[in-house]
Length: 321
Ligand SMILES: Cc1cc2nc3c(=O)[nH]c(=O)nc-3n(C[C@H](O)[C@H](O)[C@H](O)COP(=O)(O)OP(=O)(O)OC[C@H]3O[C@@H](n4cnc5c(N)ncnc54)[C@H](O)[C@@H]3O)c2cc1C
Image (cartoon, rainbow, N blue to C red; front, side, top):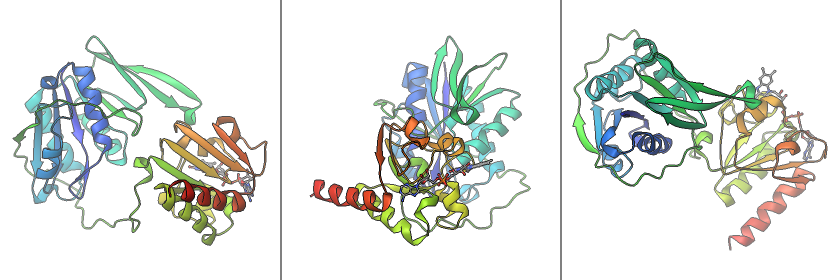
């Protein structure tokens, strides 16, 4: 099968999750010759060079001032052009905010099927079969395609391995005109934090309502600095003004999938767990031994977080020398 992968960038820097899609595409396609990537952005030469040996023989590059800032109309036209050039049977991307915007539009334009936020993916002949968490992670659905000449799918970040090692990544520049857009991106306001985005973080330490103040999040920041973690929060902590909305993990926040998730003073509501239950290792710190978070935790610490977290930070500092 021929697979086209939409590679995401922010400020002309490659989003590492896209390499997971590229490696998955390489496995589905059987050879790098059957895999192409499409990169869209203002100045993307660095990214196209980085894609060498990541699973694709061809990289379609759509660049220039028109594509500097993300605009759904321009970006989907660019991917559309790559689809025309490569004629793939599958178009893969990531279940990121950008992927969630671009892929449904492309699928609608092609009158094609779409499977989103997959955590497993295989090919049965020329047809994709994927696994998708449903109902806040309480159930899983096997999804497949029927009567779809082209199959669109997005993958949950941090689930699939980025381990392809071949792919010539020969660059083919595509000239794409600005779309007849009803939308103009005037300015992009960046989050001030220099920390790794929660959706890409490999270690997360999150705090809940029990922190009691924004100031108390300092103890989580200190622990995070020692282990290179990103700090997250429950919605209760966000609603109380202790943490900003971009830190919210859960059904109405971000879906994360780190190697290690430390939940400090978080009860483990269905809505919180919907965003983090697929984390590889979960550590919960809670004073209540009956807290639901312990049901999914690999390691549970029944303790006051104001004592346990600083102690953990201290021990981790010692371990790290
Ligand atoms: C439609 C909808 C969407 C929602 N979306 C989200 C979402 O995206 N994300 C989200 O998180 N929630 C979401 N919620 C809210 C969710 O239902 C919970 O209210 C929320 O997750 C609770 O946050 P919490 O665990 O911080 O607070 P609580 O439930 O109040 O839990 C606090 C925990 O801290 C423990 N504790 C208290 N003191 C200490 C201490 N000193 N040391 C250690 N432990 C201590 C307590 O035992 C308790 O378990 C949503 C709700 C709805 C209805």
